[in-house]
Length: 102
Image 1 (cartoon, rainbow, N blue to C red):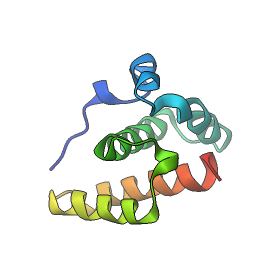
Image 2: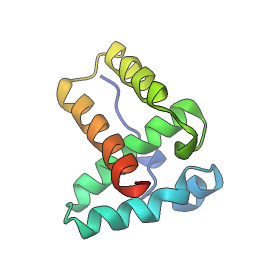
Image 3: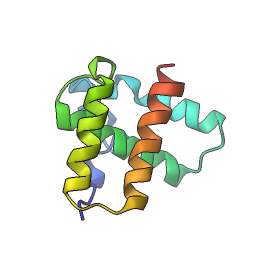
Image 4: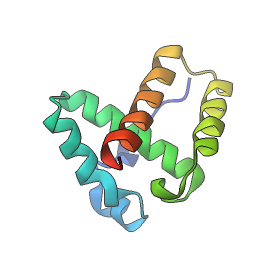
């Protein structure tokens, strides 16, 4: 199973992530989750999922397409992740595009 590296999460290293073009949405996503009462653990998990998703393509999240989302789902499924982890990834991506950018 693929494990997330906590040192690559937005929360742990916001300066580094802002420099790579991913972190510009960190604060907004965290605020949206706080407004909705998400626990700190859920927030960290969602931010880590989004970080891994964006780093996979090496493009800003607002430049990614639905086809990219589908390709990423297939990529992580082929790596043998659990259905619970896949659900977390899909939920994080859906939240990001629906609430943070929406």
